[in-house]
Image 1 (cartoon, one colour):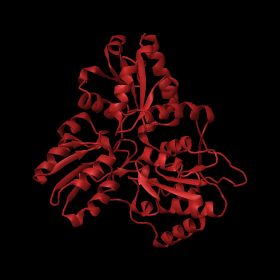
Image 2 (cartoon, one colour):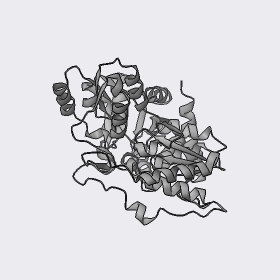
Image 3 (cartoon, helix red, strand yellow):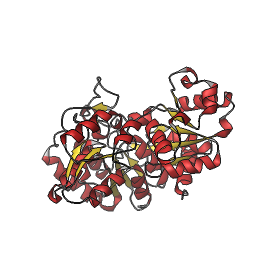
Image 4 (tube, one colour):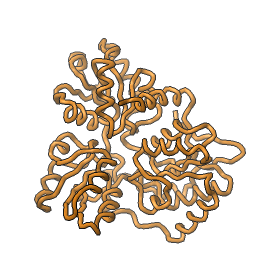
Length: 395
């Protein structure tokens, strides 16, 4: 369960309606959570930059700002550390002296930070509407029903849940309660190897593509070993025989941004840019991953470009803010970096964290008003932390 709580003596204030209105709506002609405006949002009012600096300076060591790689540049400039969701949560836990952890990311990331930080620290999300369409594709009720289906099929005792970091605290808690572990895109193979040592089958939540790509590409399983559980269909749309025969039971979830990339995108960029290296995130579809030259996590993508020789050409299949940042960073090294899809798309929910929201958050904290605190319920935190600790103990 996710709640916003009041911590005395500070008053917790909800996000003002005016700031909520600044968020961009999803493109109804595309997948939920995707907005394709043709370019990144325009920079915020320059005056806000000075206000953010002043508020952060006033707070001093009391505040620690985390910036996810997919955030806007206008927000990233104020981050004390940048990284993927799990790295940032660990960074927050390593700063116990910080009274406020301002997480410039999305809701599940702030939950993870709250789970790993002390009770004396308050994790703040500048906009409570900054969610994740993938995480929303698996609810606690749906997963509980799935477990009932597996129990009725007589296989629940053989199944080990493995949940992607990009999931809610409720799903992480389910995973911990039923003996499973969390994984990131960097250690998914290690997590699956561990899971298959514990049981005969894996229930992989909530991203079907990361689960399928890891099982087939990295572990040598066949596509036929994987079945897709659809929570919107009776029994997940699967027969008892299909469930019993499967090694990987994949949840029908996906990243709305990474899910846009197609084999046509790969073929098109190869035709347009001779000699281009195609580098994609494992949240992409299996056929895209198979057509790419390199596949890896966000950190892997960054490291690949850092090590790439001058004059090399790269088409990147991941979120646009990061791709544009990398293109600018390596331009003077004569490295050509382009977005894999011709349609310019960014994560609309991640982009809800903009400079107006960050300024409002920092100024509120500087004035003694605790806003938009994310706090995970005690029992949920207990089981979710168990699943996270299992991941930390992986080789």
